[in-house]
Length: 259
Ligand code: HXC
Image (cartoon, rainbow, N blue to C red; front, side, top):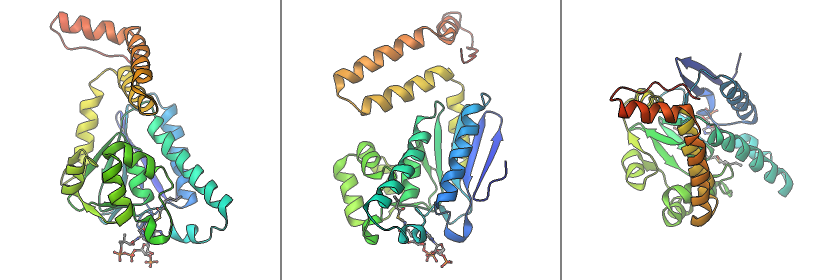
C-alpha cells in the first residue's frame, strides 16, 4: 500500500510502523491518523505479524504532537470533542491490538506524540528523546488519551506535574518516572530485541496478558481478579499451554503454534 505520511515494513514476525512527515516533525494530521488506522487494519489481518514497533522517521522527532495548524482551524465545542474522540479511537486501536506494541522514541514525543507512545505496551527512549504534554501552552489539554493513560501509567501526581508545567523530560528522567521502560542509543534495534524476546512466548498468552491488564485498569480489584481468572481459564484451554508445560516437564524447548 502507498502511504503518504507513514511507512509500514515487515521483518519476519515484526511490523514497523514509521510516522514520516519530516516537514512537521512527524506531527499527526488527520490524514496521517487515517493512514495509521489503515496500517493497523493490515497488521490485524496479517497472522504472520506477532509484534509491532511504532517509531518516527529521522533523528529529530518521534512525533511532535497533533498538527497544530489543523487544531488552529477548530471552532466550537462539538468540533473539538470530535477531534479528540477520533484521535482517542486510533490510540485505543493500537492499545487493543492482540500483539505486543513497542514505541521506539527518538527525539521529540510531545502532546499527541507522547499519547501515541502511551498507547503502546512498552516504550524505549533514545538519549535524545524529549517527552512532554505541552497542550496547556496552546490553551488545550491532552486529547488523544494522555490525561487518562499518563495518570494510569505513572500516577496522578507525576502526571499532573508534567501536564500542568508542560515541561519536557529527557530519557533518564522518563526512565525514573516509569514513563519509559528502557533507554538505548538505538531504540529501534533495542525494540526489535525486546520484540524477539516477547515472540519466544506463547502468542495467545501474550494477548491474554494485555487484555487482563487493560481491562483490569478499567475496574476495581475484585472485578479485575475475576477478569484474570476468566482469561487464565482461556489460557488453559489452548494447546500452547499443553505444549509449554509439557515441554518444561520433558526438559525441552517449547514450540508454540498460537493455538
Ligand atoms: C504542526 C509542527 C508541529 C506540530 C513542529 N511543527 N511541531 N507543525 N504541528 N505539532 C513544524 C514547525 O511548525 C516547523 O515548520 C517544523 O515542524 C520544524 O519545527 P520547529 O519548531 O522549527 O523546530 P524547533 O525550533 O527545533 O522546535 C522543535 C519543537 C517545536 C520544540 C518540537 O516544533 C514545538 O514546540 N512543536 C510543537 C510541540 C507541541 O506543542 N505539540 C503538542 C501539540 S498539541 P516550518 O514550516 O516552520 O518549518 C497536541 C494535542 C493532541 O498534540 C490532542 C488533540 C485532540
